Length: 185
Length: 279
Ligand SMILES: C[S@@+](CC[C@H](N)C(=O)[O-])C[C@H]1O[C@@H](n2cnc3c(N)ncnc32)[C@H](O)[C@@H]1O
Image (cartoon, rainbow over all chains, first blue to last red; front, side, top):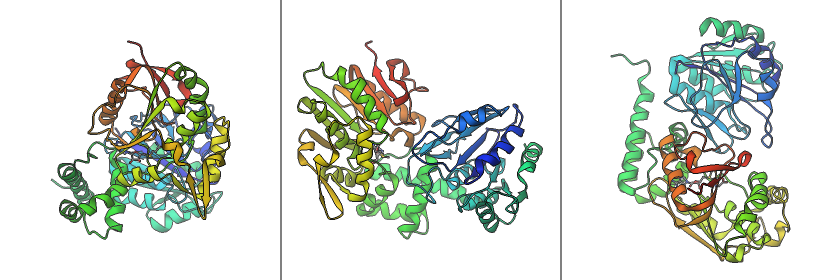
């Protein structure tokens, strides 16, 4: 696989993604894997929500599926999403991490391990600290780390925690993230 | 040759050697499990067991069998609920049970039964549907501690609310409180529920088929395996099922990409319930 973009967010993230994802073209060169914290008991409906407005394909991540360029994959409700060393996606029903399942840290850390410098990670708005350690792992593995600017994010806690652990991360307003990804990808 | 960050590569080598040692010494085979999760849990184990490296852990493991039990509790995931995903149990009740009624005697295999939540769920469901007396349940797992807990049937009282809610949503004909007594902070389930249950140690990675099952429920186990091992397990299921027998998987597991898909038809697609084909 040619690398990937991984994105994590919590409170306010659906709004943020409604700005970010529709700005990516159908032939975006990498797969985009996303963890959004949602209540565990329901199918979160994110696929339907984003299908309409996105040029990229949108679907739910399936176990051991190899992610394709031009496609957005959401972690299913109540399962962790990880990236295997061979680049395929894996689901797990392990205990919640940082009170969350799916947890952003698990996606970012496993993807960093598998994809090293071919990974781009984005940490969005949120009211907790999930994803901060993952972001640092991405940076240390040679990948690109991006955080939504806490000053303009809906809820600054998550991106601020990301910057605290990974000060080297690139800080961008939400509408600047897609253009930046296009330049990197 | 230069390496960008050598340290993680050493971890990966050590993990491979550790899993090999575990297999050769104790015949527990985790070599073909999804690696990202295994690595995470081994990192946890290394820290909590006070080891400085996976090699140190391996050395201890090879010489000290007590280390095996400890490590197994990290390598296997014991997260479960009674009537987990109630719509699955409702589909069994409404769609599968009517077929099972036509058999004079039944065998049900719960593979990867963990602490027994799924076993008691099925025993209750079969009792509610009047099939318990003619059914023999086989509950298997590789973790001895989990099998023991399954045999005891005792759960923390604070989980009972969730279990009760799930049970109701499964189309219950009785109340869950009919089946347990509360004792301080524990709920002790009625031992008559396991009168027809055989608990045993069986690995989908290394052991062979179980005879002539009418229903196999194996939920949230295959996701921990890599593709090859998933194929092995599904192959076992296919061989173990009677023709037109049923296989139920976890919510996010499917036969869609399996080499064995041709041997099964979708029975309740959304619930990942499959039926073995006639031929
Ligand atoms: C997450 S639990 C699933 C419990 C229950 N089936 C459910 O869906 O709630 C996974 C179980 O699979 C067991 N397991 C792991 N590897 C196995 C193998 N090779 N053969 C049989 N069981 C295995 C673990 O010990 C654990 O109890």
